[in-house]
Amino acid sequence: MKKQSLWITGLALLTISISSVALAGPMGGGMGPGMQGKPAAQMTEQQQADWKAWQEKNLQLRKEYLANLVKSGTLTQEQADARIKAMEANHAFRTKNGFAAPGSMYGAKLTDEQKTEMKKLFEQRLEIRKQALAEYVKSGQITQAQADQQIKRMQDNFNYKLENGFGGRGKGMGGGMGRGGKGGGPRF
Image (cartoon, rainbow, N blue to C red; front, side):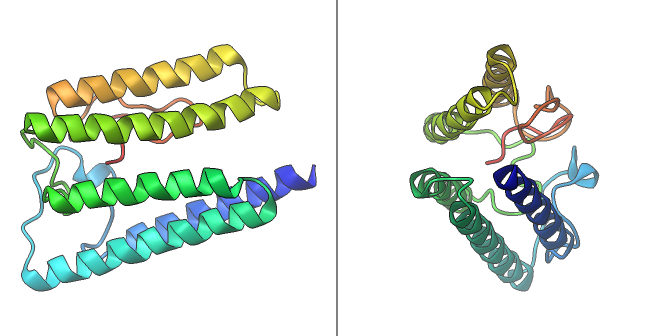
């Protein structure tokens, strides 16, 4: 019971910290509903520098959150390391390909090389998600059918976005323990 309370408290703190960071972003907000379907923001050099600093701070806060989950026994160090590796790889991909600005993936035409790299990143995220869902099934929090449905939804959504583009309204990932929502799409 204590472990579950710690987990719920940690999740609540993460939600609050991420939403606080998103709202305090240098562009006046995150990729919430207001950004869906809008072209990438044209930023000045100063805004680009501010955005980069904000992204680095957000990444650091997410790492600290994972360290707290390890400390509380909710995650193993190996699980946290896998998540950090995936976050850093996604961040590097977005930075390398010019997808760091708000809305920058909207309508972007990906090269075959970018699609291949995104598939690798997605597979990394999918494996992490499968491990987490296996733990939920094992603890009785969800059924295997629910876990399978979430994995299928995640895979279908990624395939749809890869073929039809990112941004705007899409199939979304909502309805479960995953991220996203209507038009949410994978977080790359």
